[in-house]
Image (tube, rainbow, N blue to C red; front, top):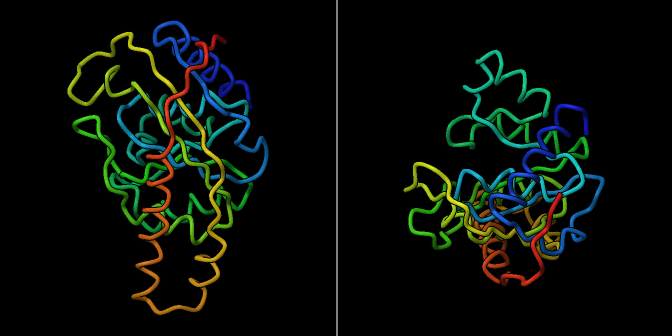
Length: 217
């Protein structure tokens, strides 16, 4: 971690520990070095830093490309090595940037649902994450956040001090689908992307809340 990232990481940890009384479950399942895809459900704006600040390694966050145009915000995002993507996060340039970070041994947080839930329930996975998974060789860790919708759902103007939890699952193996994707038809390839996305979402849904004691910085 560089200095800028470590300061932000420490401040987020302090906020989650004191205001949200967070719990962290099984962070040891995430490799400390090398490329990795963290695939999480998405219920709130506070999800990305929650998933990332619970880990003792730096994360390449995705950020809207437009944010990089603002001098102060852009400089901060670049210092955190954030990945610029378009509004939907599915553009060719954004995809290349994500794959380049993974190829360089970085960690990326992706949300299979594509957008925040409107009712607190898990949503169906979109095929976009399947494309990234199949085109990369990075291990995929399913992640589930609990309580973030109640703490700061999209219907709320301000966050409230509700307990949140982040739980990391066991790595998923996509070797068979990756091998098949190298020589299959275009129609089958699209189905492979969705199969990978659905498998990830099922793994996320299978993660149960933990009962560990709250974690402090």
